Amino acid sequence: MTSFPVVLSAPSGVGKTTIARRLMGQRDDVGYSVSCTTRAARPGETNGVDYHFLAEDEFLRRKDAGEFAEWALVHGKHYGTLRSEVSQVLSTGRHVLMDIDVQGAAQFASSFTDSVLIFVLPPSVDALVERLRQRKTETDAQLAERLRNAHAELKQVERYHHVVVNDDLDTAVGQVSAIIDVEGLNRSRVHALDAQVSGLLERLEEQIASYQL
Ligand code: 5GP
Image (tube, rainbow, N blue to C red; front, side, top):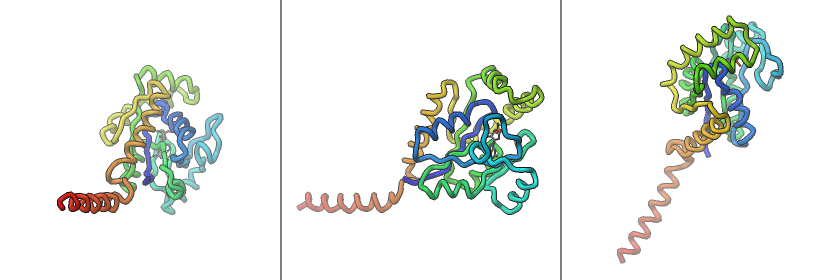
């Protein structure tokens, strides 16, 4: 099976990080690319697991050194995907799952053209606001900024290959998992397809010839 990058994007609070975690617990053939960010860690987040938390100057140094496959300014903070994280996971034969914003997703897909882009939608705006409020990690001003960004991000949905609505978590995880399975069967990804089909054709020709005797 050919491995490929899977990009999950969604407005903040839709639950894509929870979907990603749940999926990682269910599938051994998917690895996660831990992003870098200059935002502060939230309570319960661990450096190197949730994110690599970097100081601004360190992030910029690594950006200038070309270490990021994509990077973006989101909600006033830098976020980026390390090339080394992506290649490390792909080198183990697993798909690499990434949680990146819409600007970063477009950048990433332009260099990793085999990427599968999945957009996760909230079931409603009320549900989105409620989830952001329950998190209690944002001030009202930050919450308003996240909603403004959500408005802009939703308009980018047409750049994505698939859309999943996160109403029920188990259903959403199952749908992302099904997308990965189906994409693995995409003709362009089937390993050594030409050789496989040539073998079948040759054998068929032998059979046809034998029936003509
Ligand atoms: P949060 O701060 O809530 O964890 O994430 C805020 C936003 O940053 C989310 O939309 C998330 O998808 C995005 N994000 C997380 N990691 C990356 C990354 O490596 N690159 C980009 N471009 N966006 C990211």
